[in-house]
Image (cartoon, rainbow, N blue to C red; front, side):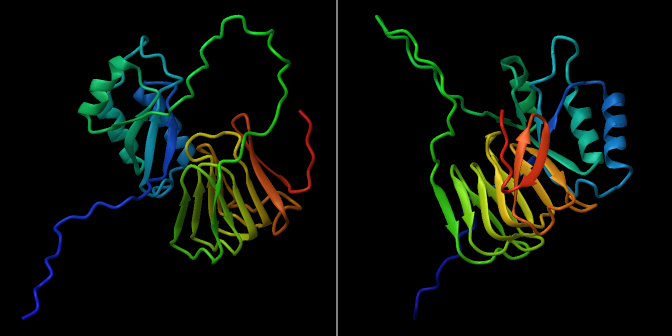
Length: 246
């Protein structure tokens, strides 16, 4: 008799979790509740059970402590599910971990060691960052599909359809209509951009900042070649041929 193949009780596979960033500047729950209520406009499904990373980099914990139980409950009441905390100070970490949240750490490059008898520093010249490599997708991205280019750019030569999601740690290049969601700079790269030959996106995001288009794209850009970039805390959508000067 043939051997019966045993089914494994659990399998662990590589996956990706995309979360919105909740940048916390205040710990007062009443103020946070009022701000969330104003943001959502009373829509119960505004966040639709998205995962959230709480960023405390702009919060001064010396003023008031964070009531993690109450904060998590507040977010969940607006259908946001906190999964991690970013920019936590060492004294905050035990409380964060005790509440079942992870620590989201963004690695920073180590500064070069000083050299003895080094020559005078040369003038600094601005230049684009070195290429990160790329993932190439040649088939349409269908509704419900999610593509993630980890640690590199994403190039798609076919349409990204409504309900699809494309994500990259670098920039995203769509040589076809972009109708779904595109999230570039997913690991925090604010210099990443999104390029599309026909801009029809539902949502675009650079380094966690996002913009939706319920009322349509800016005049003259719908179904036209366009690029998306981050300017401070603002998402700009520009003609692909636009030339800007710093």
